[in-house]
Length: 365
Image (tube, rainbow, N blue to C red; front, side, top):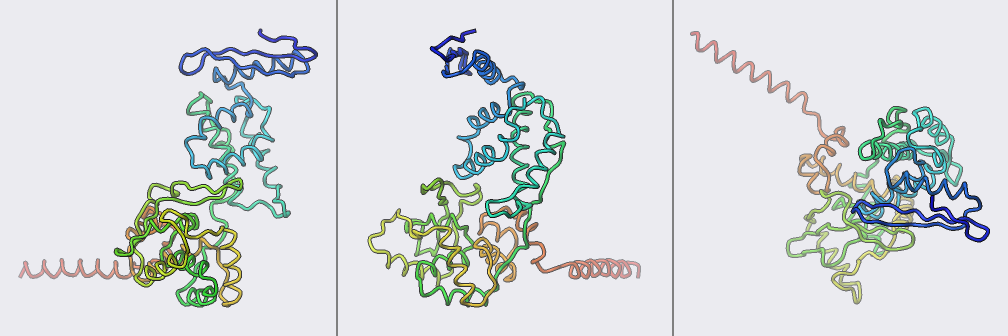
């Protein structure tokens, strides 16, 4: 065992063979006792040899390294925050192979009693997200490291997928809101894009003049803006389906041309809307209050656009292509907005049967 006395402390040198078959070594100093140094060495051995008698914290480090480069930065940031603040503190020293469904239930109970910094209980959606992240780690251990089963799956989920009713504005409500926004051009044009194109906040904030083709009246959605740890980050859109070209109404195409002409010195690849998501939320508060329309979320403008297209008679497939969704998602999430065709279906089936019977009678005669 390469554990050495290092002055008044202990030092460990751990040698191993990596996935490429190359010999490596790592070391750590500053242990108060030989026992602590040996425990660290055993944990390193468990990690490199993929033994699931390693602790949850150690396996989380493996999961971090394996997943970090596979996820969008904002997705990784969210996952990492949940792991560090909600999962590791509870399961830290438990061995992966020893965690049982009852332990997951104990963690769930602690989360159900938890609250935000303002003292509000965690929302059902957030609770479901927490459980999904825990389950993802165990699924990873099952799939790649030989864990027999997922204790989080056996324990069952908590929370729920939807936290609130879907809200949207009618065209008249949006018109009242937009009139109030005209005193601030950047706000007005931002909300025009959100309402009339149904794009996401991040997609809006990433737009540059190069994304527009004013001869064809189109805007290309190819990226998304996020602010993470105080830095402006441009990422790919939310899903592969989100990469799309959106045809703008003629009036909106002209409005955006006017807006760009007001942006002195802007380059083709400079962001047009140099504002934040919090700015948009503040302006939404102001506009709703001054116009007298109900307050909805920024994302509800996307719902408003979709509901308008449904009302105009467009199909789920056509709407999905425009907003970057799968058509099945549009059908499922907005089913209550599509006009019911049950009566029409029944009437046409009756007509079909009647036609068959009439045709049969003629043949007999």
